[in-house]
Image 1: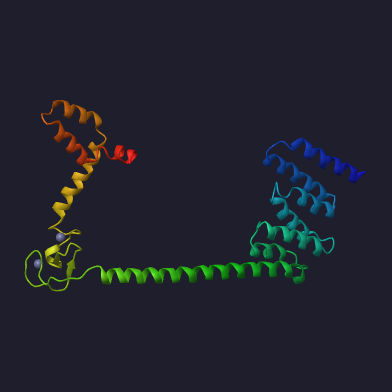
Image 2 (image 1 turned 90 degrees about the vertical axis):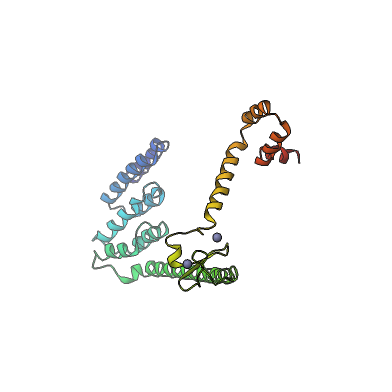
Length: 252
Ligand SMILES: [Zn+2]
Ligand SMILES: [Zn+2]
């Protein structure tokens, strides 16, 4: 009678809650687990976890605690099975598992030997893969460093021996820019760009951004063309700004 009732109960629960979301299902199967635990139906404690542990992973942890604390008999087989699932789904750290198992003085080392061995070999594999990753990154970094060294060594040949600011002989510390201007540290001060080239550079940058702004200004182009005396010059100017770049690319 008991088996039939439990089976029907579980089956009915599956039907009732099958369509509902995980939280409710987990709660209900947790109650079923309670039921089997109270009945000391050890086989079904494991079975209900196997069938529904995916919905509520907490069930495996409760089952472990149950078997470890149960004084009835030796649950080596059950504990090993539960540990397999805890390990497979990564439900608990090995240290936490060992702490729980230590609650029962009768737990034999043999019970958890396989579990510990598995955990250790997993950790070893992880460490090995991390070490391989570190080695490959180190090699990568060395290559980049060499590239940087080559760039730094070959990019700039300093031919001037005079400061571009005060025109006296350069001494250390000196800063050399790629534009081939060199400065005493004291003459350069806090500047991060070449002070001689910077105004020209700024002008070019401003011009580029204003040209980019006006590039799409078709209305401006037509108004300008209507009002100007030399239509050809206007078209040429807008060509220069790149107004027609899109059109040219399209027809090319
Ligand atoms: Zn100087
Ligand atoms: Zn310069």
